Image (tube, rainbow, N blue to C red; front, side, top):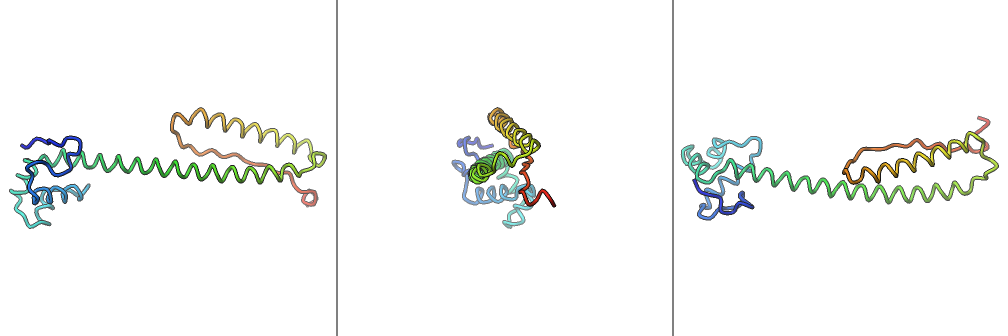
Length: 162
């Protein structure tokens, strides 16, 4: 059995491995969950004996596991990057929405607010504050739980009578 001299990237062509043996190994890797020596032999028109010898000699099982692990590692990195980009976009959108909402909020005359309206605004402010404190505390835990907050806006003067 050949030793993998290139341990870090064992799925790459090994020293002494022929081009044809490596081509067969590459196909074996790309078959993924459907991988089998028989399928490789059939697709390449090679005998089962030759494919089995190459597999044993060049340690295909362990190398293909390393290959699978590397593919999964790359997928996880890509997923994490996509999640971070999505989160950044959503934060930017949230900030813009908050600015618009705050400008609208500043235009509401205080004397037009009922005690219920005031209570709801205080409640909403406390919920937002708690959500931000909770998010800051859980950020280190790398969680992505969705959080929702119900927003109550007082009715316009004309809407109260309807």
